[in-house]
Image (tube, rainbow, N blue to C red; front, side):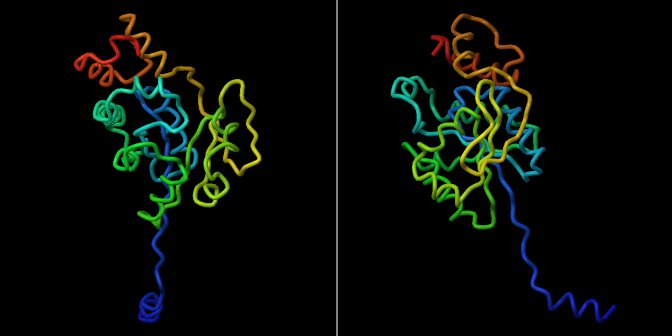
Length: 210
């Protein structure tokens, strides 16, 4: 016993690295499709957590899209309501703190510097995997993060980059569809958490369908 204790005292303990998934998006508003992907990837890859990372200004969207994005405050509040009660999900606020437009390379570089004991898994849809060759500093980005591709209808599950492919149930719902539905006074039942829809009603959001 004494020998065992002496041996243990001589060992250098290396803290276990954390594995965190990042699901970026505008979340305008957050919906069940986002939540399903985040939760399933967390479980399938045994990640410590998947964090939803709302954008301040989307780098890959046009000016018209950005103009109709509601305030950070509302988007963040809706995400909080959506993930409440699920310990596998969290929120990453770094792009909101930085403000303005941020490329994924710059964001991940800052996250790695802030959290050197974390391995990051960046989750994107199959449509974005196809677009990867055009990403800002993508070669350098690949050295900082592991990409996780989620299959989407109409897009092949292949890439010249080292992407981990994960199959999750496909829900063909979009934030755009939900906004338009609300504009037509249609209730997006089963498309988003009830608490999020209640918040939208209380705040009078998306009444113009945009």
